[in-house]
Image 1 (cartoon, rainbow, N blue to C red):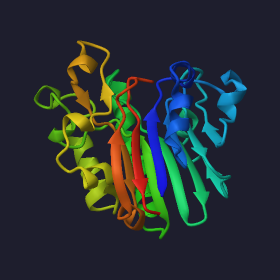
Image 2: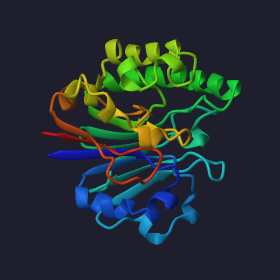
Image 3: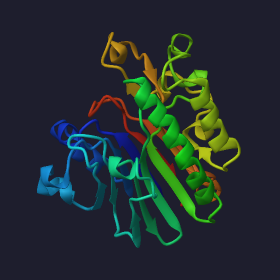
Length: 258
């Protein structure tokens, strides 16, 4: 069995203090996809650089305290890729791919556009940039899982207050159409939705820090594992873990018979 966890940490040092490593150890995953490290390599304690039982790979943002992605893997990668050829986005620490034979695991952190019109414009540029890469990956013949914070709730079922968010970043028609294109035309599978097509309250992975969103479970499903055909068809079980909080996001765990 192959177990993959993905989580936006909202700061690896903060999540660490809340017991994230201890929880991961109890889950026994083969891969952990991390987003929003908010730290440079020099900021990490030695245990963060090499968590017990894992090989750790990181792509830090050039800007201090910003973005950054990571992968924890039970075995060393054959190849690691961090650059996609974007002058604008490669320095933001948004993409990390590790290859293991015919299997590729990717940690992806798509931009949020909620802070300003400028950042929303950057988000649209990122979606346009990353799409052909996703098409090529799906057509490569490799078994690929992309775990990450996609910063888009795809359908009305994917957020509690969908009526009030139709004009807000993360649920804009153009963003939702982009996800549909990735799934319907580029050849990817939204594994959680394949396993749990009608899940609502148990599907949310992010909650605002405002208005008691967590207490009232007014959440969004922003964290996905998208997979190519063969490994997607091997998915057995998916769970969003909410018993403890390491971040404003919750970990998404999916098991594959692979």
